Length: 178
Image 1 (cartoon, rainbow, N blue to C red):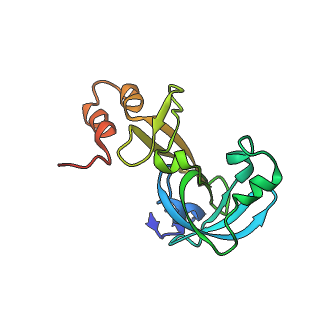
Image 2: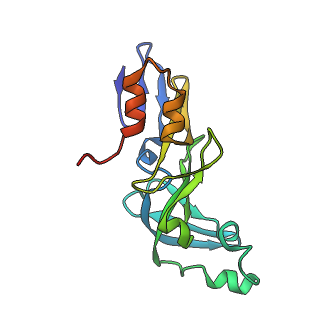
Image 3: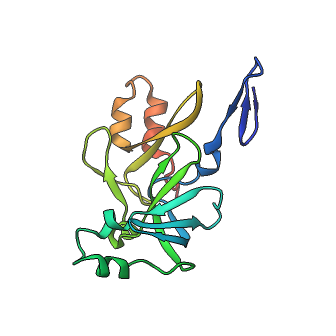
């Protein structure tokens, strides 16, 4: 198999377009810097610095609609077009092209980003140093992928006990060695 950043060619010569490769470094919990490209009634479209080939948006209604007193207050939270802002990657959609990133600008998410573990249903921290992992689920049958968020321990507990190396890696991957 010959691997290119955007195309995979198998032994039979079949080509599989891996449109989502540019977005692989963008995972839930990662802090980014972005620029407002346009406003929409629901939120804004943004460009992530260093990842201009990936689309991005902030759903301001979903993030702040229940805590504001109306449209005027909600609209006042929108940064102006051209403004740069800090955000955290909330969700990456890689099901079909183009890959798309939903960003969060909630102050609590910027401080410590957590979501429900897809295994146990309890909150897991995906910010740096947290107890969560981001699993990228892929298929050999075609492009696209899906993200699963889990506690390290939830993943390790589901790996066969005799597979001690993989269990240990699930508990330590990404941890800084001191």
